[in-house]
Image (cartoon, rainbow, N blue to C red; front, side):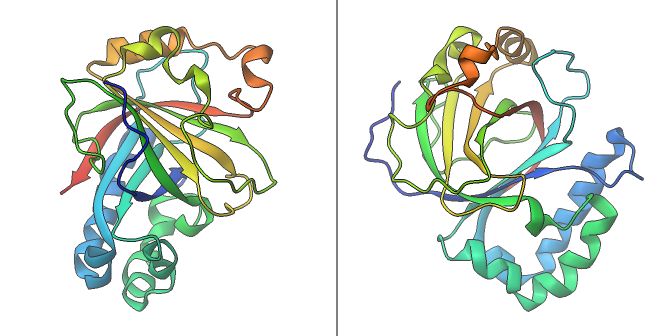
Length: 241
């Protein structure tokens, strides 16, 4: 069903990760899980982060429109907006998690993370998830990072702002569609205005949607086009709670 515009506010920290080149692509999800486990030692992480979903790139995917430049997308539901800034300077996080980041990632996490406000665009009766729900383990998602720009384009969020092609072609087979809108200036190279999650019930449905994506020049141009983008087919390899 279509979602009402008056939704509870959900703040998310999202990052688009490249693995440490020394790690094989197949070994990245396990290294990422090990890194996440360190968060249990950080009381502040438990207080500030309500839920996490680690979405690893599907290595079997072979769709021309999909990116292979990145290895995963992390979705974190925050307890409040301010947690998105506070977590970076937290003494426990700096002492326990940050030193482990170079083992897993190509850069420090802060350098490829963005703060977003979430909007559920569509949720089928079968999905039935709450507004703040994150995908659980083995959920398949196509994730689009859309309209990259070095210029910060802060603006109030509305249904009309999210690219209107979010439910076109094979994308209309998604069981849940979530649009995350950037809420502050992003690190250099990560200023995607929208991050859209399309949840699918199978890899086959997700691949079909990816193969039918319109990434022509016409689809990229204009205020509501995809713009400079990355589409990544992922599977949740770790989630909490």
